[in-house]
Image (cartoon, rainbow, N blue to C red; front, side, top):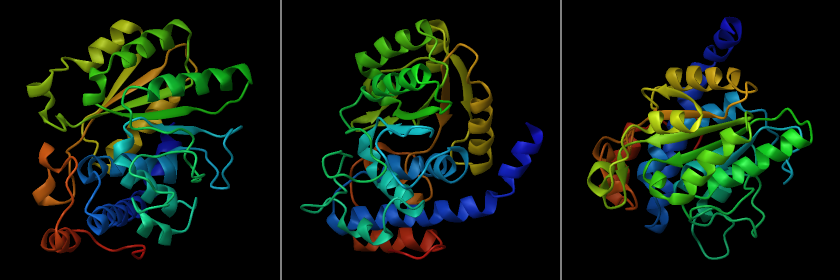
Length: 289
């Protein structure tokens, strides 16, 4: 385990540079069409980069079944900008296509969909609360097929206000879905305000533990080192009879100072001046699209 972790951490600088480029993609994509969700996308950048560039066993030569691979399902589909950027930068499609985000006839719709055939997208998402159920189905399929792959999901903390989440949370431990790692982006913000103001969530970890999950925490989900360590640890906990849940603390809008820590940038695009300010803060490392 220690040796494996050291090998992963040796790539830390490259991953951090990739995260900077992904953040540039996010703000440019949303600005170009004056539509989209930059806040949560920026907050989950380290997680998505770590997952696709280091943690998951996946193949950009995409097939829908994903046999023999790890799978990822984005439940909070409104943060599609970070998803599309990471898919592109990891080889699923050409980065130039990022410039079609949210345009008519684009494969890069505001919420991920499947009928456009975008490589890397296995389920339409953004109708909150459904991703965990889908992921459980995929994980059970892998178990039935003796497929060693792990299924990963990402959810918003506000999404936990959806009742279907808790049906899924009861189901997975009861059926020993132990090839599943679900991560909660606990940024404390949702579209109308803080989660404490809208509907307090209490102790998320304790609730899932009570349902029978193996719960762990990433205290700073915008620290690449902590994210790598947490996801690596989570993989070691699979296969032991319980699904794994990560409660990951992040800051909405992370990386762009005027967007950080507020729900106001949940679904608002930056203007020209704000875009320029954001890009000054984000190093171009892999070349803009």
